[in-house]
Amino acid sequence: MSAGEAAAAAAERDLALPEADSSAAAFFDVDNTMMRGASIYYFARGLASRKLFTMRDLAMFAWGQAAFRIRGTENAEHIGTAKEAALAFVAGQKVSDLITLCEEIYDDVLADRIWTGTRTLALQHLDAGQQVWLVTATPVELARVIAHRLGLTGALGTVAETVDGVYTGRLVGNLLHGPAKSEAVRALAAREGLDLARCFAYSDSSNDLPMLKTVGHPHAVNPDSDLRDHAKEHEWPVHDFRTGRKVTMIALPAAAGAGALAGGVAAGVALRRHYKNS
Image (cartoon, rainbow, N blue to C red; front, side, top):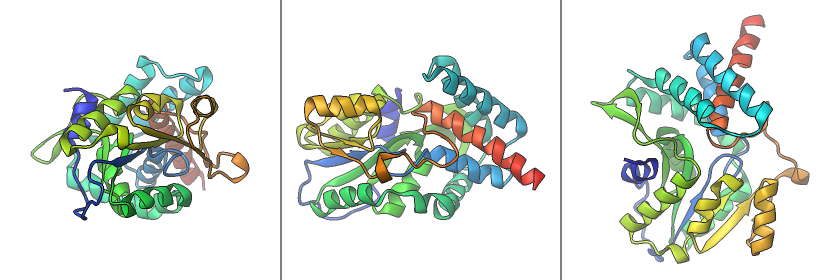
């Protein structure tokens, strides 16, 4: 099963509200679109503060992030390293325990980093009777918590395999990143009876162009330079909620896709060292 198919199959609707416009929906990226910075960074920071990562896991992520930042691009080796370390962490853990951690970390750290402007856009779609879904490479458990806390319909995220409520340490498909997001949106639209020509998508990253091009109404939010240029060329709406158009990511520059995963735990290394030395 592909990452997009897995994400759509795992998608759960959090809201059962009447839908006045049931054939349209809005799809929102998370990192730097719905919230400031990378969600997985703050999740990793929360795990590090609870001493739930080993130094070996953290070192693996740190290496991947260092290579990513030097070269400025993702490649299969770095993505594989980040993925293996993350899966090694969750293998054998209960899904219920991870969900509890996600809820705690959202309330402690993520809630204050939601862009008010982007959330307002999402609520406008809900007010119009349309579904609103998050679409992110972040683990689906964390994505669902974010969607639930924001009052959205649901979330599409990276799916980890489970057996009897316990993680096996394998993914179903792969990371929900790049073209996989478009595939997930198409699969969900088929399931929900959505007309993609009437749907909306919002993202900050040119990596999400496949998803943005899938719908009839693409929007750029806090865009990177490539996406801003593309949006301008194609006359897409652009929303920028950053003060003075300056990215306000704390502690780490934003890294798209799997690079953010690696960067998140690299930051956890620094945080853990800070705790040990303070």
